[in-house]
Picture 1 (tube, rainbow, N blue to C red):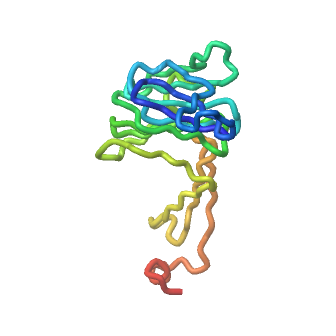
Picture 2 (cartoon, rainbow, N blue to C red):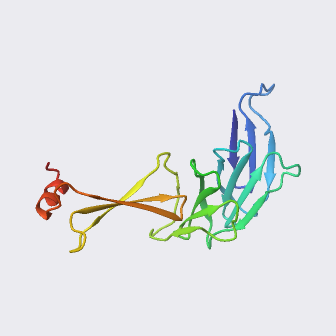
Picture 3 (spheres, helix red, strand yellow):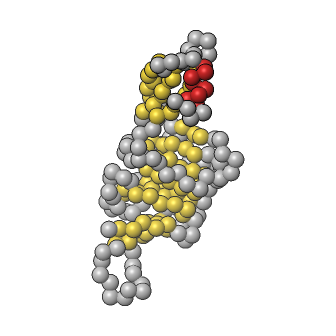
Length: 188
């Protein structure tokens, strides 16, 4: 296996965990990548493309790397946030999507095919973002519709490919407010 590391010295290293080394105390990296101009805060392997990884840092940039690139330079560089970027994660379901979290208090979703602009920015946090692990399960976002026109209806919206919202409505067996209240409180 291989290990990926980022450092305060602005470099990213790839290490071979299975190589035999004469000096067990001083293992040399397989490769060292230089592209950041400040501290590297986080690194992540791409989940589908085994030679691709990303790094983010205090220089407010996302760098996408490919171990097969002959010059060890980033294949993509993006000035991504208004403050240092603390974390990066690749989407396990869509090989083109990744998320970043920043000290600018935002989480951003990016499409690697066109990183000229964020796909989405989540701006609800009151302090810097330190982690953006992505769920490995597809998630449904549930919302109660409670108006005169749709009382007793549950609407399920599924975010598919971050931009295409699919929705379906399902009527509850008994849509009275009394039964809904009892269900919400844990009753049957």
